[in-house]
Amino acid sequence: MFVVKFFREQQYYTFLIIIITGFISCNDIHEYRVDTEFQEYVNRFTTEAAKRGQKYNFEQDGLIIEFTDLSDNRAGLCHYEKPIRIEIDSIYWREISNTKGADEMKEDLIFHEMGHGILGRDHINTLLENGDWKSIMCGGDKVGDRPWNINYRGERRDYYIDELFDESTSQPSFASMIFDGDSTGFSDKVYLSFDTSDKSDFGWEETDNNSYKITNDNKRLKFESKLDVAFLILAETKVNVLSDFIFSFSIECQSNTNTDQYGLIFGSQNNENDAVEYSLINNNQKMYMGNRLWYSYYTELTRTTINKSGINYIKVFKSGNMLYYFINGIYSYCTECELDTAGSQFGFFVPPLGTAWLNDFRIMTKQTAQIKSTGNTKSDVSFNVYKVETNNNLILSK
Ligand SMILES: [Zn+2]
Image 1 (cartoon, rainbow, N blue to C red):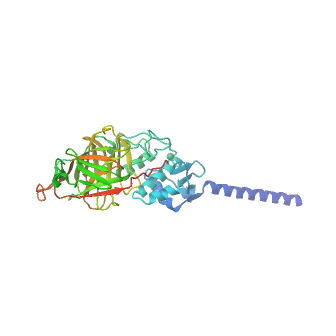
Image 2 (cartoon, rainbow, N blue to C red):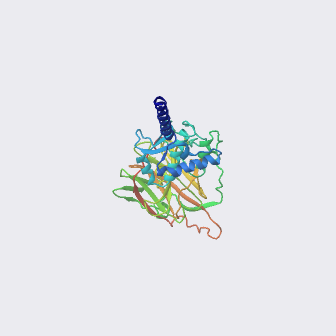
Image 3 (cartoon, rainbow, N blue to C red):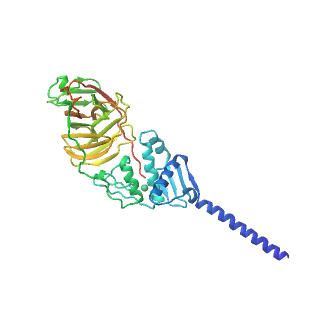
């Protein structure tokens, strides 16, 4: 009796221990702990996967995404544990949260880490024909010191999500280097030749103050910065930045290093904190497109059409919400515009302590017969010069 009872108790306790152990380990493997900040992006991942016939139930199967302080300039890190555990750098997340485009950047980061952990994808650092990263899975060892900025917006976002779930996704049309827009039917609305110092032909007033000097240098406008800050030099025109236009000029820039950026800008209001869209180049043959309200530029491209010294001719053609960029007459890139308020600022960007020469400042618009310009292409502009901090925000690796 006693023996039997003892045996039964031992069996009972062993059984109980098995159940408890099983329960604990079961809980571990299927733990779901996703900070509320990340939940929206996990939901989107599940939705995008479902659209492609892949079903995930992370709350049932387990997933951990948590804030931490990551070292080595990392934004996110995926641990191949059970369940998959993803760490996101809390400082970086907070910093991008304060900028326009934060939603796209956060989705890009979470999708990239889930690409590793859930889809089993590795880094891939090849490029599309136009120089965009081929994949949202770019990361790891740098390629030619290129920053990790990825133009994860608009039609590119759709492509990058397709590619995330199917690596063999074919090259998208935006990556083509053949210009397919229609830039016919445009005529001069504003034109400054800088051939004389006459206000109607030179626009800006010649000046020499503590911050900068503007002179007419052999039929070009010469802007010399005296400060270790960048300058936005803008013309207030009557051309709405939300309308279709072609904006161009030639520019030469000398500054401290060949990595200093200079180029073309346009924006909404007469305010240095306002949205300004830009297309900048440097004498190291790099090109940067972006919007000053965003955390950093959309992406960096190498363009051998950029002259390493001397004059470069930059042109942007805006059609609807698309911007088509040309350098020295060669089509270079297209991307969506982020401006959403009306305004009429067009100008150029000069790096800290830089000197720039500007020529043939031209804005063309599509004019209907009713509102056709009366030839008043020169006098209807006023001008502003703003000091701005250069944006050195780094996109961290994933
Ligand atoms: Zn990665």
